[in-house]
Length: 170
Image (tube, rainbow, N blue to C red):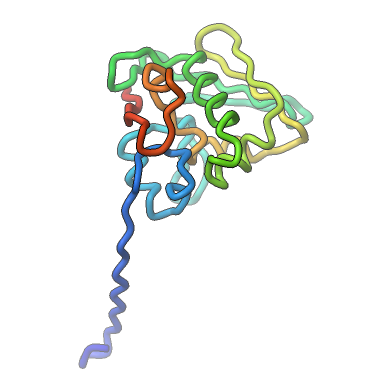
């Protein structure tokens, strides 16, 4: 406490990302999120109030039962390695997340546990079929599960430090 009555609290935080794999469990803290967001763009983003807004998905909608979540992807986006961002890239990323099972972090496990099928409709539309009604998908796709990695670096199923961090750019 200073003499003038102004209070100051300094909290030293020593946090670093061991890898740049968004599905790595140690990257599921809010401290590591900022580093990952500098590399990867997510399907949705959350504004200052925590509300979802467009990211790589420029729009989305649900069926009336909240069991089908459809995302319409932003055209003209490429990954840093020049690969095209499209529905196939989203499917590859989400299938990787599901295949990781318990090796993935809690945020990914929670999200993927809600999805029964991942479908495409053309090159720029992805449809998620859900196990039960859920209005959470626009929020969840703004975190690690929605962070898109170039499919070109996912060919050998890398995980953790073996993943080459190649995100998307618009």
